[in-house]
Length: 291
Image (cartoon, rainbow, N blue to C red; front, side):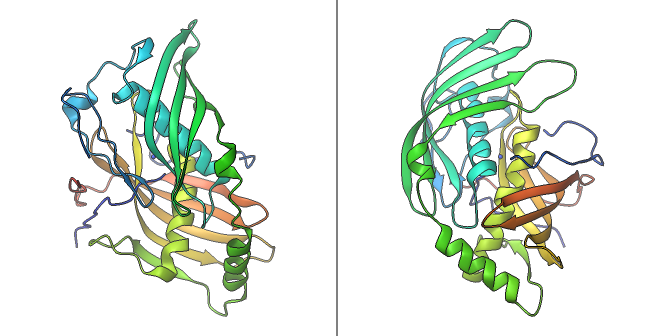
């Protein structure tokens, strides 16, 4: 049966590289303006609900100097900041979304890459808290794609404490007599059962590691769906999960399938052990536009 995906939530993110390459990252951690290249600015439960056309994606991304906050160069760099914050500070009870870009500036750094200076509004979705943050994103240039380098200052959002909720969830999952699993988060109607929302959020955090790693000046990723997620047996304090996640490439409108192996605990956060892109799913439907 064809998979119907409604991209209602997007938190967290064209993929480059071999579709079967396994990598082990380090464990440190709407209203559209009149311009044809402008970008909708809407916020949903897990980030932005953006709609783009392939014609819009053709905008020249090599602009320098002051950037239009609503156009692709500034938006793509800002989206990377969302993925960065989610990988470093995200949890089942803390997720970050890009609410809007206030200002942006880009400059070439010799032949080594391009640096973006941004003022953005970041939304912590679960607590419904927004803060204006300063960020810097550097996209390295070269034959081999490297992950962007990010610095961001969002202290107020990071002061939101979720320790009590996380510890309670951890103990629940740790003490369950049967290992938990869930499929199709959200389902084809955009629905997620309340007791599976923490699993959906964990999938978003883990998937943000992929979206951060694969991002460049020509990409724009959003989370589409956790196709399935399964808790695995473990003998240490880290809960372990196997996850099949679907990412939305906003440029090509393709759905990209990735397999993830990751761990989580309140003390250590989410740590991705393995990530592997799966072969393209030719029979799967593209997500419909959502306004």
